[in-house]
Amino acid sequence: MRAIHIDRFLENYEDLHVTEVTDPRCGDDEVLVEVRAVATNYVDLLYCRGKHQNNRKDILPPFTLGLEFAGIVLSAGRHVASSSSALKPGARVFGAHLGAFAERIAVPPTALHTIPSGWTFAQAAGLAATAPVSYGALIARAGLRAGETVLVHGAAGGLGLMAVQIAKAAGARVIATASGTVKGDVARRFGADLVVDYTSKQGMDWHRVVLDATGGKGVDVVFDSVGLVGQSVRCTKERGRVLIVGFAGREEGDKIEEVAMNRFLLKQAVVIGYRWGATQRLIPEENSRVWEELTSLLEKGFVKPTVFDKSYRGLDDVPIALRDLAARKVWGKAVVRVGSEANL
Figure 1 (spheres, rainbow, N blue to C red):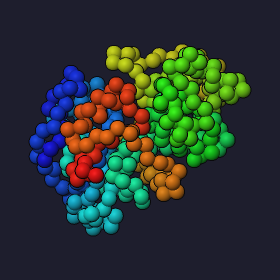
Figure 2: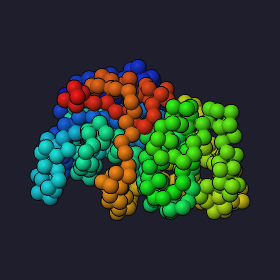
Figure 3: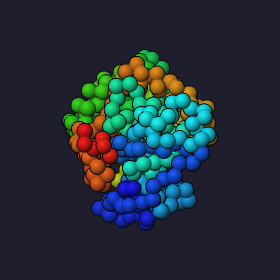
């Protein structure tokens, strides 16, 4: 079958290409899925170049790149078939598992979820590694409540747009930051109450804008997936919560920010790190609860698809989508239609 296979860590994204690899075998405890659409993630950019902490020992060449996908169940291993009626051949599913940039993938059943009613493969492909991160961080860890105010950084990105929608569904006020008018308009369209453009003259002092918008009190919760903790604490309310879920805003070679901890002491603020992958492994009951509650939001229509409006078709377009993501041209999720979905 065809796949984006990494046989060595790459120097640049231009070296990404489609190649032929051996078809995956479906084990007794696995499900074989025909991939119809895949979504790109910041972690894909790190994995292919060996820049992620997981590349030190867990994810080493050779491996097939890609994390998020949607498709149709082809078959289920005997242990799965006897225990799950939802994963029969023909079932429409989405999931997150390494090896997604391929025509077929074999995964454990815990990696799969039923596509929401009315959603296409392309719309569902970008859910599994973004929605549970934003929900788990905001609701399970930060305990965001109705009436509170949350600051969402990178609000037009994959995680950011999910965070905006989930916060609004929880009854919170959302202040969003984004780069440029296009991304700002996207964040507003998905529910942000106030948008601050990093690139505008006013946005240069965005923490002051946030303070002004909250009557000088600051926000209850900060959702930071880009790496702006130091500045964010300046506009965090007394005893506020700062969520760290990533550092996607850091450029190549940038150091992870170092923050003077007395700022948190003075604000009596709480810093919360959230790693969805680690939560899956170490606290599976929390992960199950997150998906149960998140599925309810999806079914009720509180969370909408966040597919970027550029068309990518076929696995050969995956490197193009990743380059667009690296160049920060993408809002929401850059989704590539593959297989028969590519012809729709």
